[in-house]
Length: 120
Image (cartoon, rainbow, N blue to C red; front, side, top):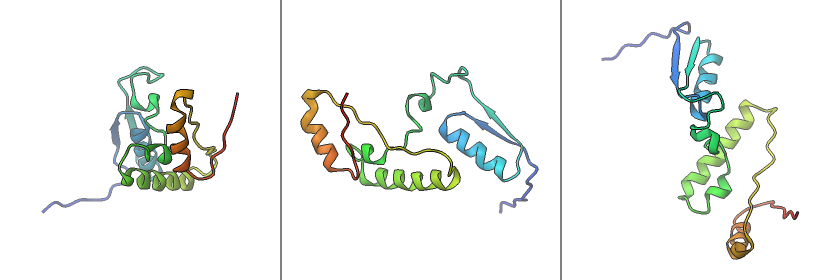
């Protein structure tokens, strides 16, 4: 049987400073742990997934090609972010389409709520 002892002073090491690692580091730090966050990439994290929108929460965009659970989890994640970081602005997602993809763009617009069309 595994026995655990709660020790808020236990140090925590997290490998990867992308969106998932940074979030876990924040939660452990808020719980009173000393946290060390390790990242192998450069300071700009140009090789990290988060640099290329890995931390983007756009559940309606994901609905285009993903299983329905992905959108549901994305919406749940947005609620968590808003709860934990209430001062962070959430202004939606920008979707850009080439004129030849107009039909796909229109179909995608029908899948969303409260969208607004922009021009140049």
